[in-house]
Length: 400
Ligand SMILES: [Fe+2]
Picture 1 (spheres, rainbow, N blue to C red):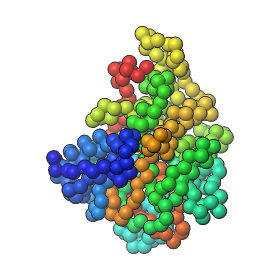
Picture 2 (picture 1 turned 90 degrees about the vertical axis):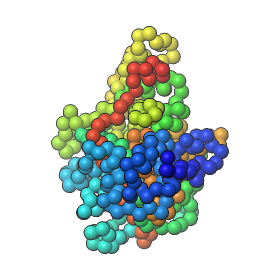
Picture 3 (picture 1 turned 90 degrees about the horizontal axis):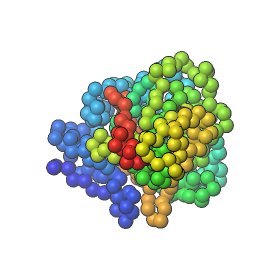
Picture 4 (picture 1 turned 180 degrees about the horizontal axis):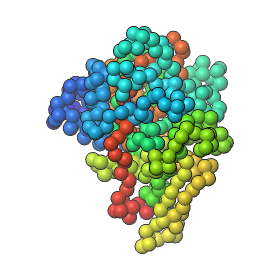
């Protein structure tokens, strides 16, 4: 063992919920790991969901190689190339600029960056919740430092391409500023103080653990059908104030109005994804992109007394789908319950490299920058060579 693993800053607190989440890795250079070191990094990532390397030096080529090492058969960026009609109309399009030499690595951030890795001039825009949510924090409150989670998500195309295993995020320029207060604005009064421009993470392990017995039984039997070209489909719709899914107002594009799509490329994925190292189940659903839920019936030998949908169901009513998902996912983004923290909000420094297990965590950008605050990150994830694995028969029997 050559790595040293330290708790992340927030998990020094005496909160059991975050104690298992994330580690800072000390003692190795992430851009030039030996095969044995990489194995240790892989194990640590699959065990702790996210890893931080401070003061890392990482070229786009090294970042691509590190990301690819988690899935050697993967090749292309997680959302495919950025040139098709399906991506120019997508809600993700304005946020991504490709590094010409290494097209799997994206430049993201805020402000204008000059002469950067072959890009003469790149205008970057930190996504602001007012462009996506149905309601927004008032300008007055924003000046007082109030903000919101932008969009909780998995990094995944969720159509045609398999969800990337790992995302790497490398901070090159980080503007300094006062912390902000992230408001949930959903009537609960929940709010969370966050560093300026944080990336917030929650673990799907926590999301599963927080479910009631009945909802666990439902989750272990459920699959999620995503919309074709989901980011184009959702573009006219508006999100909830927590950034955790879409308001049901019928604004999504009709399936007949989307760029050409094929039924066999539509993704139906388990609601719970099984960790390839630990076997743990994570609740892993991109709430904005879901179209339908498919629930298997209970196995015959199991008591049906209090079970939800004991005979199975295919829920196609979008409002009903979203209400059920929100009920299941919202508890895990709560700022804290009885002093237990659930959200890890990373306080970025320049040269921080964060790796996260994209098949376990949901994440979101947070906050707002002024136009002249320059933030530059390199991001890489790769469409996976396989789909995530769902619960085994034994898992089903354990949780139904
Ligand atoms: Fe992301």
